[in-house]
Each structure stands twice: as C-alpha cells, then as structure tokens.
Length: 168
Image (cartoon, rainbow, N blue to C red; front, side, top):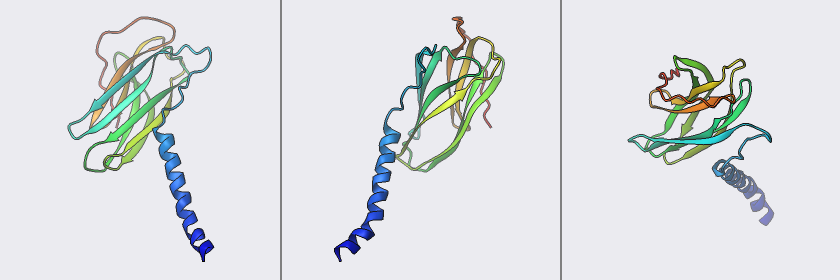
C-alpha cells in the first residue's frame, strides 16, 4: 500500500521540484555575457513604473558594441497590477533621424504579482557606422525606455533627443 501512495505522489513531487528549479533560475541574475578581450563597457540600467504597478527594468552595456556582433540585454517585467498583463515588446536601434533597426521582438503574459526575468541577445546590423545611437525598449501602447549607446570605438557623445521608436 505504501509504494502505491508513493508512486501516485512521485509525479507531483517531480513537478514541484521542476517548478522550484525554474523559479530559482529565473530569479537569479544571469551571468554577464562578456567575452574575454571584449570592448563592452559602462553598463546602463533603467526602470519605469506605471500608475497600475507595472514595472519594467532593463540593463546592458552602453559602450563598445560592434557592427555584426551581439550584446546581452537583461529585461525584468513585474506585474504589480490586479489584472493579467499580456503584451509584446521590441528593442529598437535609433539613429538621429529614425528607427535604424528592430533588434528583438517578444511576447509575454504575466499573472498579477508575478515577475518575468530574461536575458536577450541583440545583434547589431553589419555595416553599422560608428557613433552614438539610441537603444529603445518598447511595450506598444504602454511605454518606451531609451538609452544612448556607443557603437564602435568612437567616443563621441550625443546630447540631443532620439526619434520616437515605432514598434507595431
């Protein structure tokens, strides 16, 4: 009789262990992706919160991005509202006149009070000129967060405003 109970409980215990492992992995800070000899430096961090308790945070490197190469971006979404939060996001590269490229797209669904942490790798287009660019995280219809980043080894800065990102 005892082994019959154990065999019935085993799938439930296995499921609980898997869920716990996923929670631990998703809450842990991802390993910083920086290759030895990489030029990536100067991290950025931005946070935005709306009136409903929805929080978006992101971080990455501000300098040393190279055309044709990738860079890690960490995103954290927190649903502090009372409703399920479903939506999409995109990460766009802005030059001084327009959207230069959409680097990443994704979708999410979060229950009230839940967090979603993820690490995305964005790839910069081949042939991209060196200089300052805007990097925007957009959640259409809700918010956008922008940072100024540097592509290449040039050290010029840009103090102007970036065009509006347009993530359908």
